[in-house]
Length: 627
Image (cartoon, rainbow, N blue to C red):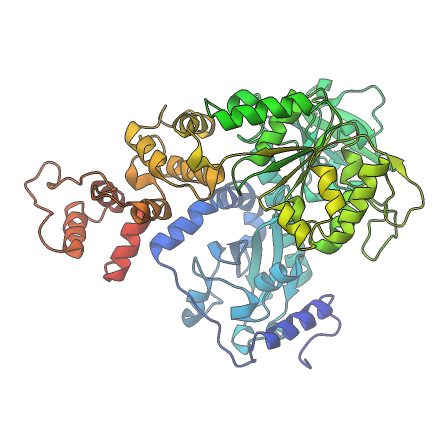
């Protein structure tokens, strides 16, 4: 630790990283672990992160060319796991033996590379600069690294932007530039995803800086609900604005920002009293799917906007669930929905909310399994400022109060800690909430819907779920059937395909693919079906979906469950089209090589001919040493 610069603003971050490295079993003399990826694996990695890669390369880096042109620095973009997607700049300061460290696919996590800008930024969650001697591995001490995380509109890590240099640039300048570039990428991603179909409110403290990367950006929909916000907006407002109306964030009086003239500046004052300048950019086209107006989650993807008519196509059990739920939803009767993971419980609840008298009021969905146990109570019931270490200086009203006069959906309620169960029971009994650290109670009026993929009765018997709470939440019990048991699954597949396909995709699923879908057992239910459709659409692009477009694990599932003698795969052609080349002779390896050579190394055409997915062909070719 003597080599660490005690004046460095990141000295504590570096010290903590070194401690982690020792915990990983690394020493200063350890060598970086290289796990090279094949060209096909790198292609897949880049395809999975195409939006991030294109946004960075086409919309952000061009603005910094002049700054970087006269310096020996290398820009790296990684995915959320620290795997390099691409690099730009000057590699002259990198010795030839080290260049594999900067190739696409190389992963720069602390576990394999020790303290380094990329891995340490991922570990600590913020921008960091690592000087030469602060790298834990001596072999990495030839460079200085500056890296900043890239977060999406949900504040989830999607990548890291890094600049490694020979110190030609002032290092404070380099770190500032990396922060600026990462913020630019975040902003462009948000605008790219939401700009066309939503209103965009840009605001800053200075009217001249509205086009700055440090401006706050809020995207809100036709229902006047914020659906996305960049990091700066959250910082300047000191809260999470998603699900709220602009009038709940700013003192707008009777003003409706949806009526604002495009790109006209206007003064804004937050409810906390801060003065801003802002402008609204109107959507250039309607949002692809209308969001439920009162949904505080403000979903705008294909899974939003469902009605009951979109959920069943002749399945009697679904029809019964819809009929029963519709009769009680507007009465003070709690509903408990049972069903395997992925059967569509949340989508059912959204459709129920849309059909209820409270459709114009919020629907707040809470996944009890996704919130850390120690945070469940503060998230659900809110807290006063200073209620605990790390609490927001403004406090929080909690999700239960956000659902006031609307619907509260508690998904995976069986995962709720016992301490939170006791507080929830009190809320349901007394119809009021007392935030953590407060002596004041607030009345709440909610319709409660819960869901579980477990047997709550069994959890009651084992002492993991309160008996009294069980009888509070289980007024009407509904059971959504798994996809494999639904009699309408063929039509459901057709409808979901129509919902997720884009205009350039083929209009319908072919019958042979629908036949395969009907044979599959779908252990992941509708969620798995949607994933398979999305993969197939991405692979097929404008072509008709065929067997080779389907994921390998889907094909493997079919092969595993096939009990009769008929092969799962359609009969493969015995002749290569247009030739007299017989591919039935020899073993599978000979067949693969014959077809691969015939198509002059074209993996896509080889896969299509053999009825495999491209990933299977890539994998088999690697096994026999061809790629």
